[in-house]
Image (cartoon, rainbow, N blue to C red; front, top):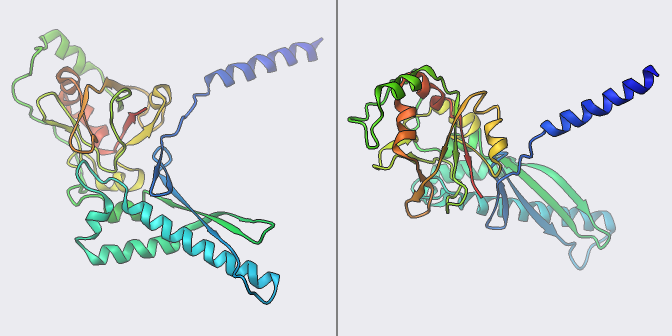
Length: 289
């Protein structure tokens, strides 16, 4: 009998924990034949190599095919990285064209990208998959120089409150709430993932961008996290336990990377320095379709 009740309890516990699991729904984009996973902050590229028509033996044929596949994968990876959007007006390629040294450094990073999968097919063909992080060394190299180390964040002076005006009771209530992160629901908008996003209010004033985040955190984890699931964003450890959730109103800019939120929502972010402190650490999630 005890075993029966233990079994029932175990089933209930499994059901409860399963129900608490939130689907991540990664935001994945194909860029120049590569696979960019913005949720995980990685880019993957594949190369396929075939053995030359004339080879001495099977081991030699396989070795040559593998070398060809790896070379093609690294070439594809570099091409994909160059097409990643940095901000609303530029891609990595345009940034590299301004500095040959950076171009060389990125090439070295691509040569060090690790092989995550290799397949040896029966016809002698070899397929190799490479993976590289968009954080760490790549972020340090590519992120705009405007993103600097920030020791502390002071309240942003936004001038007179924009309509609709907030009464004193609303302002007081906002001051009592300490938000731990920001979640922007941009579903339904033509928004696109980008390394250095900007969030604006309805008057075009910046609410979040390169001037708000400390370079240390931006390099380690990116300026923002991306997902296609609002529930996953709200429960993500990046934004901690009590994120402010706002709705994106529209996108602006040539590549639709900057997101506009309402003036009242922007006011909540600007109300106290405590609310702004999480921006320093890049505790921002953006939900896209």
